[in-house]
Image (tube, rainbow, N blue to C red):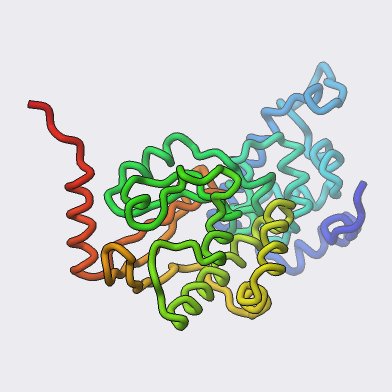
Length: 306
């Protein structure tokens, strides 16, 4: 049994006395949901599924609380408290072990973390390098410039109007479609003032830090950051600054080499079921830009059959 966490150090007797002395007995609505969810998870797991003997006569279906506690490396009293929906503090490490014991799906894991910690869990695995089909349909169906990227800022999908205004990623090999490296290399379709470039890059790196905090264990992500630190003094300075921004990219004013003065508000969203994907949309922010986007959409519209 792992005794390195606070959940497993306290003797059961002292833990139970602490419950009685310091915690309210009335459960909150989320606590009731948590209790019902954990009981249902416990009931659906057969002892044989986790390598335990399956007695012929059992009072309840599935695992006992003692089984769950042993498999998850916590005390029986502590797990009982968790399943009862009591208010408590739970570390990521222990909650992940409980998710593994119950063989939770990704959605169920997110649900349990939300019930216990009121937040989503850290993303596991590596950022995907392929675009989900429904996200590709979303991006290509938009009438404003848009892309889909992963947390490492690899561009996964884009639409025709984004190719027309910003960049056609189909002209680049897949392993060269990293938006960060392209932006810091200066490979753009527009000119900007030094102040505008600095402001734009500052916002981008401030947002990058949030993605990195969720996926910093990814080796390829770390390689991108290290390459930029070596090749770009600007990136190195911004990366070491305290600025962080999880919100909008803001409005970007610039002079396009073909279309002149433009302004776009860049906004991103996380599609349901795809926590490692970001859809970034560039919304026209002034009348001139709106007029241009309307004209380009009309020009690119397929001709109607007679």
